[in-house]
Length: 435
Image (cartoon, rainbow, N blue to C red; front, side, top):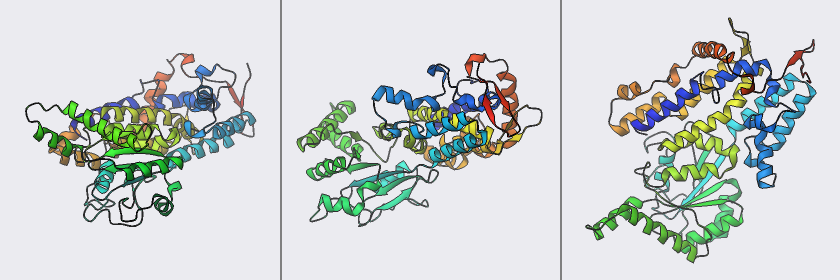
């Protein structure tokens, strides 16, 4: 993460915090959602006006013609469950189910198996993705790596539900793919990354075919493309072109795999030493996009901030996340706010914003690492950050944002957010008033 990524992450965080950012800021939505929490599921209104969290499942069914629940932010069963609670008129039941849905989304596990021959750079790759140095707690050891006979799990230091597994090397004498997959328990993993340092062999291809038969995605990663480029540069000092050399390397990798009966291999050229170059950012994006939206939420937040596109994808994931946070904050442990006609869980909002800062790399530990990487003073990097740092976001600041948002929300067009009229009875039930 360099100075540019810090600035981009800061701009993304500012847009999340801005009460004027009416289409995406959950702080602005709170006064409106508090008026009618069931407005999250406005039955009888055009689907185009439904929030993304409520409509995505049916849209995916229309587009894909299947019921793959992993394609939705919430599963179809979860959404139907929420609708039933809403139709019964039970505010407490609906609120609890929304909280369960939020907890599920934020804690769903993603396990990635990383394999390859000895010396392919598995440990270095894992540390780079987890934004760890070898001396850091929880980092994969690079000295003597590749000798373990058992899978070793390395959890993300900030998102512990995202786990990269250093799997045993695949080129041991008498290597058997079937035995290997049984020993590592192939069903445990959501996807696999097969690393090679120079070229992909028949062993890589055979392993990938068996993994795909088990229903898992496979990504081929050439882990030391910088060394390949340097060799090409030395062999053609006068006519060297990095773009042409990269294309030749990629084509050679694809051809080698296709020759071993691998269909449409996904090949990425990376350097774990310089993660922001080559295909490392693209690999992070591809992994998040193909894991289903539920698991991709955690994965994209855990992806290192090494490109503008990744930062924008994180921001988009937060936009989706905000609908659930908004509803839960209004329904669970809500406390009246003086001078405002709303009640909400301010502590949840503050912790959510702090989490967003961490994901954008605006917390102290991330900025300190960025300062070490760029060689710039820590205070100089902090000066680039205009939005509050993670440690600076307090409940008092959230209340100030709510007060500012409440005054602006009154001026918003009624059609901006679907709102239903409600009434409460002595049993504290919330019912929709049919028009």
